Length: 228
Image 1 (tube, helix red, strand yellow):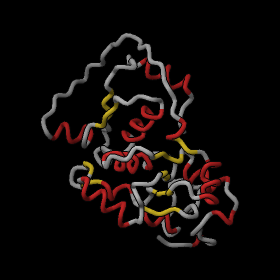
Image 2: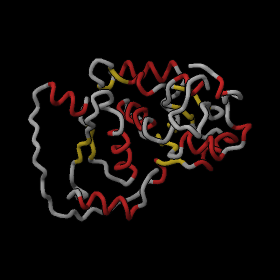
Image 3: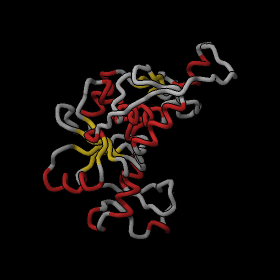
Image 4: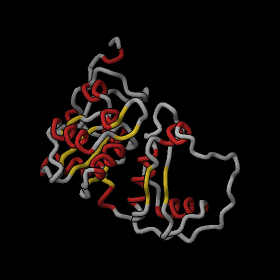
């Protein structure tokens, strides 16, 4: 979940970050070098920090291209960061509930297709698969080149959204399992020039836990007996 202003400011100040700092985020997981980096990118943007970028392909690609690395830990002075939280970028469960009635935005789920359709397990034992009503599915991995985990071209990304019936000229909210891979789709839309997007921070984990049963689609009744 998104941290409080106090927690965020304290954390980034300890990293020596100031309001004029250009933050470059990267991942170091060989399988998903573009995975949680987008969540950090989205978090900085949510707190009003526009000067934030993602290192394409993460640390694995950097090393593969002979980029310099070090084992030294830098000592930096405490930053003087002051955030400007933009609540428009973060949706709560109440916003999703209201959208079922008034259709103010499109809801796009970033989870793998099987979890969205209720035929593959969720990674959390207390959560069954399924989806939120009126949502469509674009699995986040479909936005990446699998050979090096870089983002696909703008033309390919645009085709992904179009194939799912998503109109990028209208507001879009991205959801997933817990608010992480939704940010991959947020980045994809941003690379296409989209500005009016947001993420549902609680995502399916919160929705499954708190929403009425009739608002949980594709949830298998006898899930524990299913074979995957």
